[in-house]
Length: 110
Image 1 (tube, helix red, strand yellow):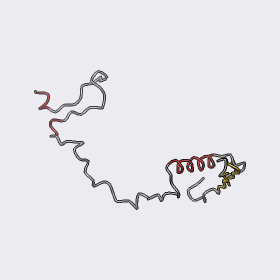
Image 2 (tube, one colour):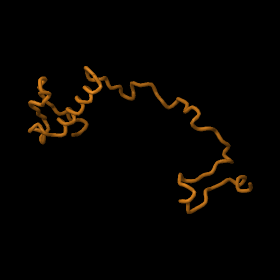
Image 3 (spheres, rainbow, N blue to C red):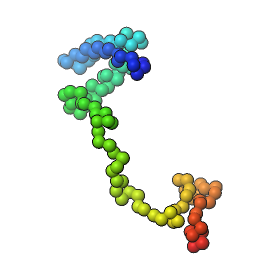
Image 4 (cartoon, rainbow, N blue to C red):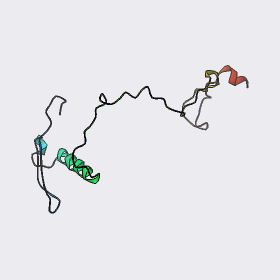
């Protein structure tokens, strides 16, 4: 399905008395029998809504509708350090290293 194609038409009939699917149909060529991934996705989504007690489809906010996030500080997760005290290496343990990490001249003298 391409981005410009219209969405598939799904028909799902549920029995309220015994909680079973009475009839299902999808406009997708492989789903004419009512047995395709689109129907399974719809049933899974409805079960998810029921599990959380939702009475209607929740409104999805797009990223452009939300406030921008890049300006928020990270808090105290990363503390500042002078460049001269940093050790540059890949995230591997010392036993797995074949090469020594890159140190500054000041750290090598200590």
